[in-house]
Image (cartoon, rainbow, N blue to C red):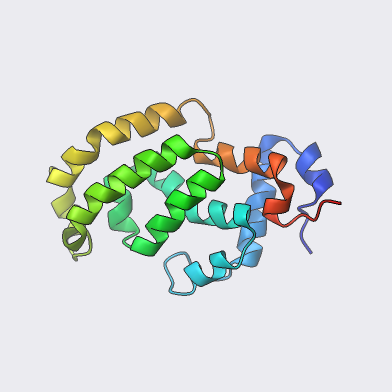
Length: 169
């Protein structure tokens, strides 16, 4: 049974709520993020949880690397579309715009990103150059919130508990 309830959403600190949301996602998505079952599983979730699951790896990528590198690590067009929609659902349309623009550039080099040596190719590549300004804009935008994209998870859950599977009467 989940400990994600209307009461826990309203009474938890941001850190506690993020932990509850993460635990809920782990409980509902048994598939590994890089498995073929991942997308079908997240598509069965309530809108907010689906968006959170789709944006998780982007937050990790932006903490460790950049937008272009994200598409090499997560080389899946359907997941990229889910991620962009997820950012919109979570209330981050500017991030969605930046992500979609980077994705548009990444598609120009999709074969390279899907190759075995993509990580060696990427540094100094035309894609890295093309997304450089988008990275700067994205990081500047995310710097407004100490928790990056995860800030939007917590904010969304507080505003839309029904979107994380809580029945509100």
